[in-house]
Length: 354
Image (cartoon, rainbow, N blue to C red; front, top):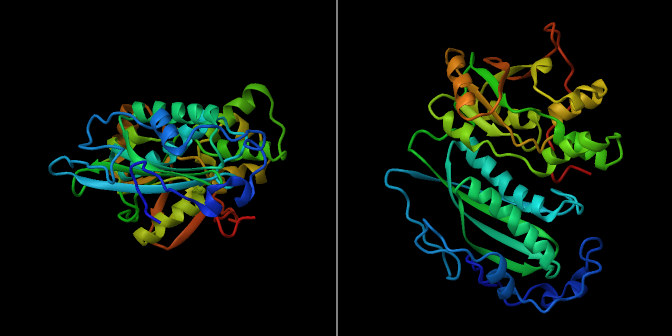
């Protein structure tokens, strides 16, 4: 099959691209009949925008980008699958927002400035109300971060969204997972646990009503990528990662890449009043293993403490010191008195999760 990454699409899909023969999904698409809108029609209507910086955008076999002289490309790809990365109940505009946000979060963790992105979209069938909302949320976030859509692919199939983002960073200034040193302080942006608590509410494990539920749902469905903070931390942070699979698991990536250990102060991890109101076990799950926070976890020398605070202020993003890095390998979690806390949480794994 010919892959065209500038919204040329594929002429045929599995079982001739018929969602009925491929196994139609229940839920959002079950009551929507086939509409007289074809692949190229929907591309032209929802995803064809003039590019401002790219040499050539969608509509050809390849997009053409001109790198800024002296800069390096930072590139990242994420796929979102319904039922695994998002619920069928998510509003289309929120889904468009989150699809790009999780990718921009990777650029933030690298300290890269967003430039361009591509979109690959598989749809059970054409639903114009869904596409209009999805495009609205996608473009609203894209415009706020000055990143433009330069191409992609569409096909029929179960709802899947794939985005590749490209950003620029000066040579030698990219934030990486390796580079942290013993004695560095460990920091996190924003607050953790709200997205996981929202998921527990959707699962019926906790009772949340009114404004509390709306606030937590926004955290889950509309994460805010910390691009400004990532840029402000260039030259200050020694290592960084975005929190997508839970604090314990993502911190583990930094520890392995940097060949260091860490002591994490559980009671210093920033969280909302809603997470604070949970029982101890659930609160720990939300904070240590929750995932979907898309905050930045980063290390910086203790001597740069004031610089980190200033970077957070310039980025209008709260930052909190939650631990230190150690020469002894492994992760140790302590309470407010410094007493060890047994660690049972682990990172989310797509192939091990139920």
